[in-house]
Length: 481
Image (cartoon, rainbow, N blue to C red; front, top):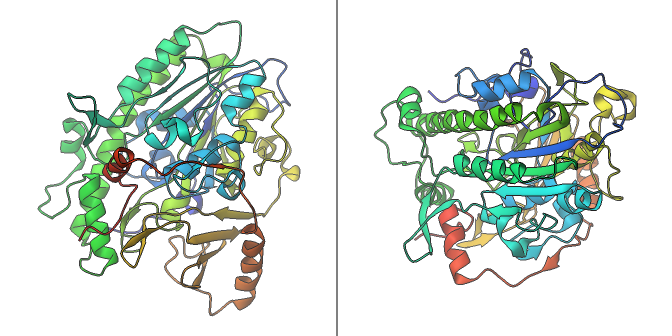
């Protein structure tokens, strides 16, 4: 039977033996101030990774032993909010420390122009490298691949390639290839200079294609209509949205179990990269950060996949730091945000952050907690794949949070929902009618936030070929009738 999990940020804290999330430094430290030497930085993004499916965040099944062991040697952030529920705007935020309303990349019609971790660290003398596994990051026109050394920014496509060189329709696991390229890049580096390496993995995203060994281990026999293939799931989601079909417990259990098997498959591959860092002698000088862009919905609000809403199953993400300058065995309950990743990495690298970014340096939470705000407004935006009158609708919803109170607003209908995460962690009971003062407070702050004008540059609409790829990847929902 499917059940709503108690989210990690409200769960009983387990020993930090576990997870691999966002920022991670490989060696422990004594919490000193900015380092005298420039530290290497590795940022790992696991696309579509929910924290509550990792052992270090309380998942009961053993699907992430290498990630869990990794987390045990670093610091785990229990309560992290993403800026958007899908890949492109969320990664633009991860790499800039800015909300989508600031950097401006809300849809496929814009290109990022602001400083990124790669452009900024390159200016500070860093060698910069990236191996990414998504069109939303790797496509040059979106501007996320700027700043990498010549020949050291590679997009490993997430789909199979046909004999004529055109993209196919199967979304494959690419972790082994990504790690192979990353090892090559690191082997070619100048050891006298610090490096920044960004790795993005699409493996736990649908299509679900786990190692058969782990599928047998985690997935029970299922005779329903779902396949785990993205295109089929998009059709099912659209039927749910039109009221033509409802998820059953067996359907949700199948997707959750396939997700478990996929995570276990990926965890094995990621362990190979951890071993490489150790064997290459890079642990003591390298801060490693692991996080995600967004989660996945498994029926918590009646649907599947991601992109359409800002509920916790989609915007609660993992973040783990490990390495020099990072405490060992630390768990941080203070709410933080994806905008905080970049400034925290700058701090751990020992370089100043660009002026004017939205995020905060989360190292303050162990160096000087009094300097970090106890409560602040946190936002999520830039949804997509909603359908209005049979057509895709983008950026029609907003979320603002203060402490445990969360307000959701639908710009199209004007509807607002209020939840209290302290006793309703999966946002099932709308309190808007019971607490109009909180609705007004959060709504006013949201109004102010929505006045921002992003700095992104408009680009030409996606080509027909690109639209076909986006549809394969589930980024063009549409009406499939």
